[in-house]
Image (cartoon, rainbow, N blue to C red; front, side, top):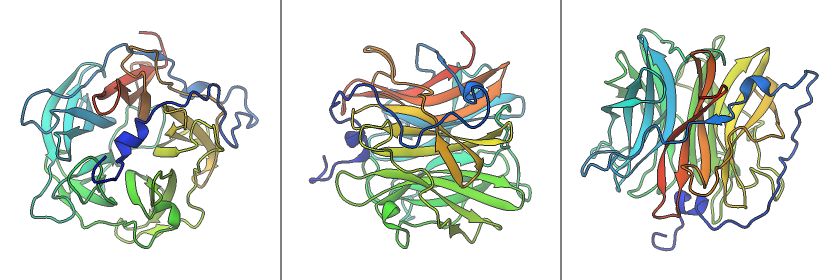
Length: 355
């Protein structure tokens, strides 16, 4: 708690209430197909973190790592991730040959003390990529540039204050030019007035879609997922049906948070991977399916659950990133063990075939 304010990490880390078996509001897996969830399942967890805080004093990711975004680039796998040094978020890059062993490449988006928006934090959450589930996450360019979406919190500390969303452009994935923010919580609906969180950027036809989660004001707050669209990456319109993914009923897996969307297409349907936080104190990666990008039904099944006591994800298995490679679907996520504020937060992975 900072001056009477509970931050998001502490809120997620609150004591479990032991609600036992839970169901998702509006959940359905009956969409006229046999076992429609089968292509999206990744039940086989790798038992160790694949990336953790560096532990090296003075590095941007000294304390912990968070928010993976995995993709393929020039014959290797890459991951953007958020590092926390005790003061704020910055964004780094790692690469890998096998999606398990990762090499840190350093910061690609750093805080800027001269910028009132990013002087403490800047967290990249996605880069424009193809939309196919059965893909290694190949990036696509716009006018010769890669495009990423980021969010930034205005205060020092862990996710302090109402965050905004912006874009950045790069030709080499290392050097990025930021734009001014494109979305602010001010002017949004009540569900997002407390601040904007992780943005997922995608393109379908001539339209750009920006899915993002946001929070209400007050304590305790709720998080839900909405949508803004654009045809030029400059002028954005919030979708009137937002939030498209709402909190479930009390006791549901996502009755507090329905957050961190990732959108991929398979078999004529759109899959929204997301995480739910329940009043039982645990976070889990979940799934909703839709025939369009504005109408989703939650699946009555946990994709990646929190683990047993003593495991790397005993508290939270959340914040999904999904690619297909080496004959399997890989689902990277943020794993948390221990008790806040002394918890261990890093990147883990599960996949669709045994290790």
